[in-house]
Amino acid sequence: MTHPIELTIEEPLPGAFVWQLLETDDQGKRPRVLRKAFEPVESYELALSSGQRALQSEIRHRAPHGASAT
Image (cartoon, rainbow, N blue to C red; front, top):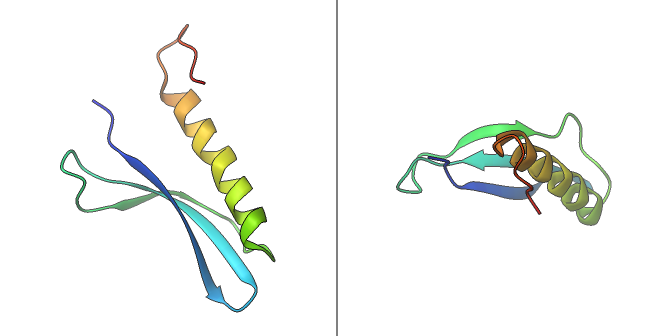
């Protein structure tokens, strides 16, 4: 069974945005950081697009061989 993954964007400092992928348990509780940005970027949009690419990569990595994740 796969657990839900959530993409979040935070702004720890003004103008510094970071993404992270959080994975929760079967009940959607106790999120843990699955992957996160190495360094902040200067806009929310850049952080979002980078986070979306990381999420798609994670989905492809978890897909059974031969299955297409679109």
